[in-house]
Image (cartoon, rainbow, N blue to C red; front, side):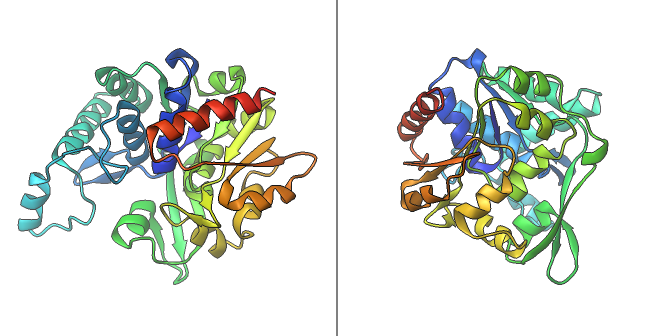
Length: 304
Protein backbone atom coordinates (compact mmCIF):
# COMPACT_ATOMS: atom_id res chain seq x y z
CA UNK A 1 0.00 0.00 0.00
CA UNK A 2 1.41 3.36 -1.01
CA UNK A 3 0.10 6.93 -0.66
CA UNK A 4 1.46 9.17 -3.37
CA UNK A 5 1.29 12.11 -5.72
CA UNK A 6 3.56 13.67 -8.30
CA UNK A 7 6.54 12.22 -10.14
CA UNK A 8 8.33 10.94 -7.02
CA UNK A 9 5.20 9.18 -5.88
CA UNK A 10 4.63 7.65 -9.31
CA UNK A 11 8.18 6.28 -9.35
CA UNK A 12 7.71 4.78 -5.90
CA UNK A 13 4.53 3.08 -7.10
CA UNK A 14 6.41 1.76 -10.15
CA UNK A 15 9.19 0.43 -7.92
CA UNK A 16 6.70 -1.48 -5.79
CA UNK A 17 4.85 -2.75 -8.85
CA UNK A 18 8.11 -4.28 -10.07
CA UNK A 19 8.65 -6.02 -6.74
CA UNK A 20 5.31 -7.35 -5.47
CA UNK A 21 2.43 -9.15 -7.16
CA UNK A 22 -0.18 -6.74 -8.62
CA UNK A 23 -2.96 -8.09 -6.41
CA UNK A 24 -0.93 -7.16 -3.34
CA UNK A 25 -0.46 -3.52 -4.31
CA UNK A 26 -2.89 -0.65 -3.75
CA UNK A 27 -1.95 2.90 -4.73
CA UNK A 28 -3.91 5.79 -3.21
CA UNK A 29 -3.37 9.00 -5.16
CA UNK A 30 -3.79 12.68 -4.36
CA UNK A 31 -6.67 14.46 -6.10
CA UNK A 32 -6.08 17.93 -4.67
CA UNK A 33 -4.33 18.92 -7.92
CA UNK A 34 -7.35 17.98 -10.08
CA UNK A 35 -8.79 20.85 -12.07
CA UNK A 36 -10.82 21.81 -15.10
CA UNK A 37 -8.54 22.92 -17.93
CA UNK A 38 -9.75 23.67 -21.48
CA UNK A 39 -13.12 22.36 -20.36
CA UNK A 40 -11.87 18.87 -19.47
CA UNK A 41 -11.29 17.19 -16.11
CA UNK A 42 -7.54 16.94 -15.56
CA UNK A 43 -6.37 14.53 -12.85
CA UNK A 44 -2.68 15.35 -12.97
CA UNK A 45 -1.41 13.04 -10.22
CA UNK A 46 -3.64 10.12 -11.17
CA UNK A 47 -2.49 10.30 -14.77
CA UNK A 48 1.17 10.65 -13.80
CA UNK A 49 0.90 7.55 -11.60
CA UNK A 50 -1.05 5.48 -14.12
CA UNK A 51 1.18 6.41 -17.07
CA UNK A 52 4.31 5.62 -15.04
CA UNK A 53 2.94 2.26 -13.92
CA UNK A 54 2.18 1.47 -17.57
CA UNK A 55 5.68 2.55 -18.65
CA UNK A 56 4.40 5.18 -21.09
CA UNK A 57 5.19 8.39 -19.18
CA UNK A 58 7.03 11.27 -20.80
CA UNK A 59 10.79 11.80 -20.29
CA UNK A 60 10.17 14.56 -17.74
CA UNK A 61 8.12 12.16 -15.59
CA UNK A 62 4.64 13.37 -16.56
CA UNK A 63 2.53 13.35 -19.69
CA UNK A 64 2.95 10.66 -22.34
CA UNK A 65 6.06 9.61 -24.22
CA UNK A 66 6.27 10.80 -27.83
CA UNK A 67 3.05 12.78 -27.52
CA UNK A 68 2.18 15.53 -29.97
CA UNK A 69 0.77 18.96 -29.16
CA UNK A 70 -1.32 19.83 -32.20
CA UNK A 71 -4.37 20.81 -30.15
CA UNK A 72 -2.28 23.13 -27.96
CA UNK A 73 -0.85 24.79 -31.08
CA UNK A 74 -4.37 25.35 -32.45
CA UNK A 75 -5.61 26.74 -29.12
CA UNK A 76 -2.65 29.11 -28.93
CA UNK A 77 -3.40 30.38 -32.44
CA UNK A 78 -6.90 31.13 -31.21
CA UNK A 79 -5.52 33.27 -28.40
CA UNK A 80 -5.95 30.92 -25.44
CA UNK A 81 -3.46 30.71 -22.58
CA UNK A 82 -1.76 27.35 -23.14
CA UNK A 83 0.67 27.47 -20.23
CA UNK A 84 -0.90 24.19 -19.06
CA UNK A 85 0.38 21.89 -21.78
CA UNK A 86 -1.63 18.75 -22.55
CA UNK A 87 -0.39 16.46 -25.29
CA UNK A 88 -2.92 15.17 -27.79
CA UNK A 89 -3.03 11.63 -26.38
CA UNK A 90 -2.99 12.95 -22.84
CA UNK A 91 -5.92 15.18 -23.75
CA UNK A 92 -7.75 12.09 -25.05
CA UNK A 93 -7.44 10.54 -21.58
CA UNK A 94 -8.88 13.70 -20.05
CA UNK A 95 -11.71 13.82 -22.59
CA UNK A 96 -12.57 10.19 -21.86
CA UNK A 97 -12.56 10.88 -18.10
CA UNK A 98 -14.73 13.99 -18.51
CA UNK A 99 -17.25 12.14 -20.66
CA UNK A 100 -17.46 9.20 -18.25
CA UNK A 101 -17.83 11.46 -15.21
CA UNK A 102 -20.57 13.30 -17.07
CA UNK A 103 -22.40 10.00 -17.38
CA UNK A 104 -22.39 9.69 -13.62
CA UNK A 105 -19.48 7.31 -13.10
CA UNK A 106 -17.35 8.05 -10.01
CA UNK A 107 -13.70 8.94 -10.46
CA UNK A 108 -12.55 5.66 -8.89
CA UNK A 109 -14.49 3.64 -11.47
CA UNK A 110 -13.20 5.72 -14.38
CA UNK A 111 -9.64 5.33 -13.04
CA UNK A 112 -10.10 1.55 -12.81
CA UNK A 113 -11.36 1.52 -16.40
CA UNK A 114 -8.29 3.44 -17.61
CA UNK A 115 -6.01 1.06 -15.70
CA UNK A 116 -7.66 -1.95 -17.35
CA UNK A 117 -7.25 -0.38 -20.78
CA UNK A 118 -3.52 -0.07 -20.06
CA UNK A 119 -3.22 -3.62 -18.74
CA UNK A 120 -2.52 -2.69 -15.12
CA UNK A 121 -3.41 -5.26 -12.49
CA UNK A 122 -2.84 -3.33 -9.29
CA UNK A 123 -5.52 -1.23 -7.60
CA UNK A 124 -5.10 2.50 -8.24
CA UNK A 125 -7.53 4.64 -6.25
CA UNK A 126 -8.13 8.37 -6.05
CA UNK A 127 -8.12 9.35 -2.39
CA UNK A 128 -11.79 10.29 -2.79
CA UNK A 129 -14.47 10.44 -5.46
CA UNK A 130 -15.56 13.81 -4.08
CA UNK A 131 -14.28 17.20 -5.18
CA UNK A 132 -11.31 18.13 -3.00
CA UNK A 133 -9.12 20.96 -4.25
CA UNK A 134 -5.85 22.27 -2.88
CA UNK A 135 -6.02 26.06 -2.56
CA UNK A 136 -2.83 28.05 -2.12
CA UNK A 137 -2.45 31.39 -0.35
CA UNK A 138 0.71 33.23 -1.36
CA UNK A 139 2.62 36.03 0.34
CA UNK A 140 0.62 38.75 -1.46
CA UNK A 141 -2.52 37.46 0.28
CA UNK A 142 -4.00 36.08 -2.94
CA UNK A 143 -5.67 32.65 -2.92
CA UNK A 144 -5.37 30.52 -6.05
CA UNK A 145 -5.87 26.99 -7.31
CA UNK A 146 -2.97 24.57 -7.16
CA UNK A 147 -2.57 24.56 -10.93
CA UNK A 148 -2.54 28.39 -11.05
CA UNK A 149 0.25 28.38 -8.44
CA UNK A 150 2.20 25.43 -9.82
CA UNK A 151 1.87 25.69 -13.59
CA UNK A 152 0.89 29.21 -14.60
CA UNK A 153 2.99 30.92 -11.91
CA UNK A 154 5.65 28.19 -11.89
CA UNK A 155 5.50 27.84 -8.08
CA UNK A 156 7.59 30.99 -7.64
CA UNK A 157 5.38 32.56 -4.94
CA UNK A 158 6.06 31.90 -1.24
CA UNK A 159 3.20 29.80 0.15
CA UNK A 160 1.86 31.03 3.48
CA UNK A 161 -1.26 28.90 3.86
CA UNK A 162 -2.96 25.88 2.31
CA UNK A 163 -6.59 24.87 2.21
CA UNK A 164 -7.99 21.52 1.05
CA UNK A 165 -11.39 22.74 -0.04
CA UNK A 166 -14.11 20.11 0.21
CA UNK A 167 -12.05 17.68 2.26
CA UNK A 168 -14.07 17.98 5.46
CA UNK A 169 -17.25 16.76 3.77
CA UNK A 170 -15.59 14.12 1.59
CA UNK A 171 -15.36 10.36 2.06
CA UNK A 172 -12.54 7.99 1.06
CA UNK A 173 -12.89 6.28 -2.30
CA UNK A 174 -14.48 2.81 -2.10
CA UNK A 175 -11.87 0.31 -0.99
CA UNK A 176 -9.35 2.85 0.32
CA UNK A 177 -9.94 2.35 4.04
CA UNK A 178 -10.19 -1.42 3.63
CA UNK A 179 -6.88 -1.48 1.79
CA UNK A 180 -5.23 0.57 4.54
CA UNK A 181 -6.65 -1.64 7.26
CA UNK A 182 -5.49 -4.82 5.54
CA UNK A 183 -2.05 -3.64 4.44
CA UNK A 184 1.05 -5.39 5.78
CA UNK A 185 3.03 -2.24 5.08
CA UNK A 186 1.88 1.33 4.44
CA UNK A 187 4.34 3.48 2.51
CA UNK A 188 4.20 7.25 2.16
CA UNK A 189 5.96 7.95 -1.12
CA UNK A 190 8.69 10.58 -1.63
CA UNK A 191 6.10 13.18 -2.58
CA UNK A 192 5.76 16.79 -1.47
CA UNK A 193 4.19 16.47 2.02
CA UNK A 194 2.00 19.62 2.10
CA UNK A 195 0.99 19.53 -1.57
CA UNK A 196 0.69 15.81 -2.36
CA UNK A 197 0.30 13.82 0.88
CA UNK A 198 -1.56 16.12 3.26
CA UNK A 199 -4.51 16.40 0.85
CA UNK A 200 -4.87 12.60 1.09
CA UNK A 201 -4.52 12.55 4.88
CA UNK A 202 -7.16 15.29 5.18
CA UNK A 203 -9.87 12.99 3.78
CA UNK A 204 -11.85 11.92 6.89
CA UNK A 205 -10.81 8.47 8.05
CA UNK A 206 -7.56 8.17 6.11
CA UNK A 207 -5.23 9.77 8.64
CA UNK A 208 -6.70 7.62 11.43
CA UNK A 209 -6.31 4.48 9.31
CA UNK A 210 -2.66 5.30 8.59
CA UNK A 211 -1.99 6.06 12.26
CA UNK A 212 -3.56 2.73 13.25
CA UNK A 213 -1.43 0.68 10.82
CA UNK A 214 1.23 -1.45 12.45
CA UNK A 215 4.03 -0.57 10.05
CA UNK A 216 4.25 2.77 8.25
CA UNK A 217 7.33 4.02 6.40
CA UNK A 218 7.74 7.40 4.75
CA UNK A 219 10.36 8.11 2.10
CA UNK A 220 11.86 11.59 2.23
CA UNK A 221 11.62 13.54 -1.04
CA UNK A 222 14.80 15.43 -0.15
CA UNK A 223 18.35 14.86 -1.33
CA UNK A 224 20.95 16.77 0.68
CA UNK A 225 18.10 18.92 1.90
CA UNK A 226 16.64 19.73 -1.53
CA UNK A 227 13.88 18.17 -3.60
CA UNK A 228 14.85 16.46 -6.84
CA UNK A 229 11.74 17.94 -8.47
CA UNK A 230 9.25 20.54 -7.36
CA UNK A 231 9.10 23.08 -4.53
CA UNK A 232 8.93 20.80 -1.46
CA UNK A 233 11.78 22.53 0.38
CA UNK A 234 10.52 26.02 -0.45
CA UNK A 235 6.91 25.28 0.50
CA UNK A 236 7.88 23.66 3.79
CA UNK A 237 10.11 26.62 4.65
CA UNK A 238 7.50 29.25 3.78
CA UNK A 239 4.92 27.38 5.88
CA UNK A 240 7.28 27.67 8.85
CA UNK A 241 8.22 23.98 9.01
CA UNK A 242 11.70 22.86 10.12
CA UNK A 243 14.29 22.44 7.39
CA UNK A 244 15.38 19.15 5.87
CA UNK A 245 14.72 15.80 7.48
CA UNK A 246 13.36 17.42 10.64
CA UNK A 247 10.62 18.97 8.51
CA UNK A 248 9.66 15.63 7.00
CA UNK A 249 9.48 14.11 10.48
CA UNK A 250 7.25 16.99 11.58
CA UNK A 251 5.03 16.55 8.51
CA UNK A 252 4.27 12.94 9.48
CA UNK A 253 4.45 13.17 13.27
CA UNK A 254 2.35 10.48 14.91
CA UNK A 255 1.94 8.52 11.69
CA UNK A 256 5.18 6.72 10.82
CA UNK A 257 7.49 4.16 12.40
CA UNK A 258 10.33 4.73 9.94
CA UNK A 259 11.60 7.59 7.79
CA UNK A 260 13.94 6.60 4.98
CA UNK A 261 16.31 9.36 3.87
CA UNK A 262 18.76 9.38 1.00
CA UNK A 263 22.39 8.50 1.63
CA UNK A 264 23.18 12.20 1.09
CA UNK A 265 21.27 12.82 4.33
CA UNK A 266 22.46 9.74 6.21
CA UNK A 267 23.82 11.89 9.05
CA UNK A 268 20.19 12.62 9.90
CA UNK A 269 19.87 9.10 11.32
CA UNK A 270 20.76 10.93 14.55
CA UNK A 271 17.22 12.35 14.49
CA UNK A 272 15.79 8.91 15.27
CA UNK A 273 13.46 8.77 18.27
CA UNK A 274 11.92 5.87 20.19
CA UNK A 275 8.79 6.36 18.05
CA UNK A 276 10.42 6.83 14.65
CA UNK A 277 13.72 5.54 13.35
CA UNK A 278 15.55 7.38 10.55
CA UNK A 279 17.35 5.10 8.10
CA UNK A 280 19.59 5.98 5.18
CA UNK A 281 19.41 4.32 1.75
CA UNK A 282 19.79 5.14 -1.94
CA UNK A 283 16.36 6.64 -2.62
CA UNK A 284 16.97 7.88 -6.18
CA UNK A 285 14.19 6.14 -8.13
CA UNK A 286 14.64 7.67 -11.59
CA UNK A 287 15.79 4.40 -13.17
CA UNK A 288 13.30 1.51 -12.86
CA UNK A 289 15.99 -1.01 -11.89
CA UNK A 290 17.19 1.23 -9.05
CA UNK A 291 13.61 1.61 -7.92
CA UNK A 292 13.07 -2.14 -7.79
CA UNK A 293 16.24 -2.60 -5.74
CA UNK A 294 15.09 0.06 -3.31
CA UNK A 295 11.58 -1.40 -3.03
CA UNK A 296 12.98 -4.87 -2.33
CA UNK A 297 15.30 -3.42 0.32
CA UNK A 298 12.47 -1.43 1.88
CA UNK A 299 10.10 -4.39 2.12
CA UNK A 300 12.85 -6.58 3.59
CA UNK A 301 13.93 -3.89 6.07
CA UNK A 302 10.40 -3.16 7.25
CA UNK A 303 9.65 -6.85 7.77
CA UNK A 304 12.53 -7.27 10.22
